[in-house]
Amino acid sequence: MLKHMILLEVIALERGIMRSVAVFLGAKDVKNLAYKDAAVELGEALASKEITLVYGGSNTGLMRTLADAVLNANGKVIGVSVDALAHHEAPHDQLTELHITANMHERKSKMAKLADGFISMAGGIGTLEEFFEVYTWARLGFHQKPVALLNTDHYFDHMLQFLDHAKDEGFVDLQARNQIIVNKDPNDLLHQMLQSV
Figure 1: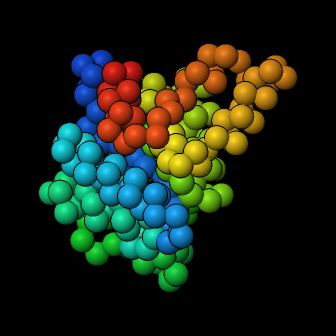
Figure 2: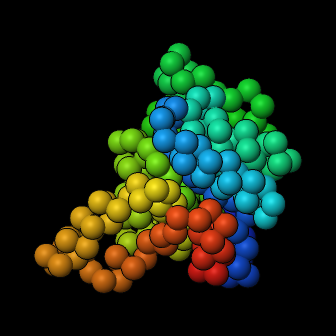
């Protein structure tokens, strides 16, 4: 069964199909409305391309904004939450599917299995940790799925500068640095991701 699932995934990616994207982003409301606008635009773009959103399942902040945008455009949304977070980060109640995992490790693993690609948007420590984990997995050859940053309002500029510094110091090779797809426009970012699979 596992071999069959892996085979289906490889076939889909070889044909340039991206059926689902995991998006990592903040669960807080922030003052800069550019992030909210980007979440809405990305959600609408995913729905228009019939790409299922896989996300952390939260009913708050940018995470809710993104999920609502997909659902309002008649798209599909899969939430993956953690049982321990339900007390202060309630799951969205209108999702196409909701998976509850026992811990954060299972949550990230489930999201990775459900997704054909990964996008990180503006967010905090958890978002950064999720990004670097799937980025590391790609570098180690554990998956061949596109890893992307939606760089709204230059949010990731300093992080990208740090990666350039790490490259200059010999800790990150050029291929690894260039593996990240970066764009400030949600539609253009999805186009780049689709071209890469």
